[in-house]
Image 1 (cartoon, protein in one colour):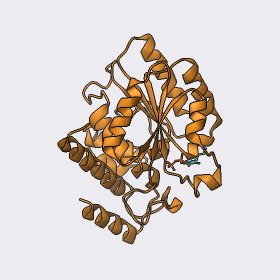
Image 2 (image 1 turned 120 degrees about the vertical axis):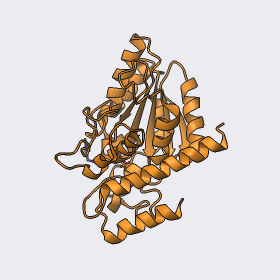
Image 3 (image 1 turned 135 degrees about the horizontal axis):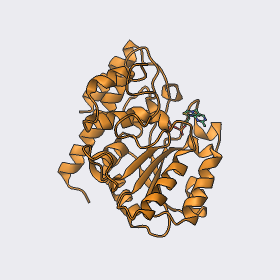
Image 4 (image 1 turned 180 degrees about the vertical axis):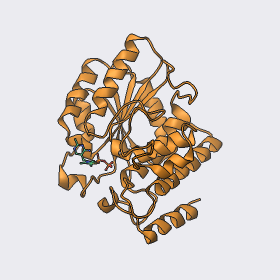
Length: 275
Ligand SMILES: Cc1ncc(C[n+]2csc(CCOP(=O)(O)OP(=O)(O)O)c2C)c(N)n1
């Protein structure tokens, strides 16, 4: 259980992260809006509540690691890292610019980023490697890996899934951002993988379903996952792609769409109204 103050604080942070994403995308350039903002609550919880993460001790061997396997959603991670003070706000205005720090996918030269991602399907393998190394080092650090539902079509991910169960990787928690839409349309029409929960369970994981925009429930699910021993845990977050912006919710056009002047203003107005 979390107290009312913490809940309100994390909700406000999720709201701020959404606003930062809109500011980063701006008018007239493409940006991964939908799959970024579907993660706003999870990012708020992980970086501002759950993770052992100290911005002044980025090399602490006991820190928790976050691997954003669906690296195209980097904007929401950049927003969180910026709000934590890891780089100046001016960098948000230079996202995806050649002279900017923040490129389209996470890169190791960005403070706070632990893994290069973007080629879907690889993040879980990276996370398992980290978790096994942490175990060898007897570190207190845990690893969190965020995957997409469209990403579930990647074969490497299922090999990694088996490996995690085989090696009893219990210092890792994985998430699927189950927003049901991928780049060009509904995930069920692009590459249908029904019964994700049963499949992961059959692969030896502890699997939990969780409403993905409910901060208290996300915190409770992560806590439950931490208690699991001798096997890895997966939290499937039931989310809405584009959450928070009426024109983008469930709309594949805003997977990596362009905001024009009207949609940009509408996004800001909806943020304002949601305060
Ligand atoms: C190996 C690989 N194939 C294709 C792509 C192109 N791509 C980028 S995002 C995306 C859709 C991903 O869908 P999902 O995992 O559901 O992400 P979300 O909807 O949460 O943004 C694809 C196919 C990629 N980045 N990597």
